[in-house]
View 1 (cartoon, helix red, strand yellow):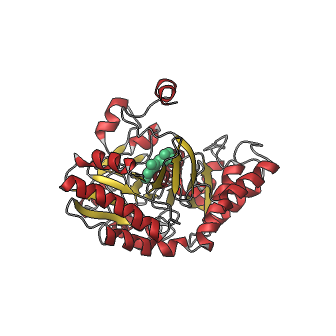
View 2 (cartoon, helix red, strand yellow):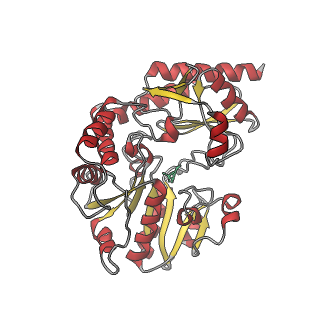
View 3 (cartoon, helix red, strand yellow):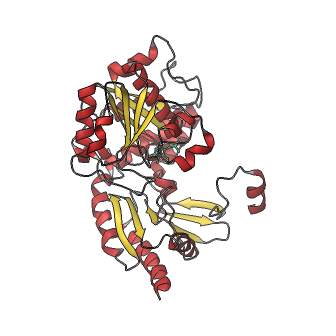
Length: 392
Ligand SMILES: Cc1ncc(COP(=O)(O)O)c(C=O)c1O
């Protein structure tokens, strides 16, 4: 299989982790050799409920028995879509409505288009070192030139500011359609906003009539200890984009905006954003089941306790700091050369860790939200064992 994987399947890097998967269950993934791996990555923050959660698989099976794709998004009334949109909109204080997409990056595209439509402006302010997805609009607002350079020209009208720098907020002006930020910068190294940074961004946007778009694709759906990451910072953005954990392991995204804004996509021109498979009923059913389970099992509350367990168990002389919030954590090593070695050695010992996009010293720790405390301790012990070996 490995030879065919390398030969027939489009590759993303010269060094894929390359374990061959047999099955996955709970917090574990099993390879075809029968080896068991504890999953501290959760499909890069997507598998909030671990693998094969019965509530999600049952919802998928029930929906499969009724109907799968019946029509492009937005024409027929399909209860899994409506119910998922309702659940999500109820997490907002005002009247917000939800547009379901295929992926996070499509949600970002929809949000950027909506901001242009609402403001009749086109300039977008984004942050250096940000990541918002890999289609061309999302890439245009992602702030790492070594990734973007080879693909220019991208979408024009984007200006970058330094995340967490209040002085840069004056670049947000009456020409700005939207400011787009990750609530906690992911690829950059799980950088949490300082003090009142987001509050000041939000105020500045209001002053000049720009919209604030927060990318909650990774921070949303309970991962940071609140349902939305922005709830830590006393603001409510104009538009939120989400994905990853929303689907319970199935591919999904959504952009969420005040109802009066969202309604602009239906006229002048009509079909302002369209998608064939966005909100697919099987995936929406999985998403709804995942949201209900996260709520009923009180997983968000437990996230804070689990963060403490990781922080307590991961003190080591080779780790400079643990960054992030809730179960969106990164162990920042002192030496970036150690990162790939640690990931490989942990894999050999049965623990899956991963990298962050741009912070080369970071080990990603984003386990399922329902991982047990003992599993967390087991994983931390493996990581510490590997670090001890390297230290000696
Ligand atoms: C913060 C953030 N925004 C956008 C995306 C893009 O989402 P997707 O891969 O579903 O297109 C990601 C994915 O890693 C992300 O972490």
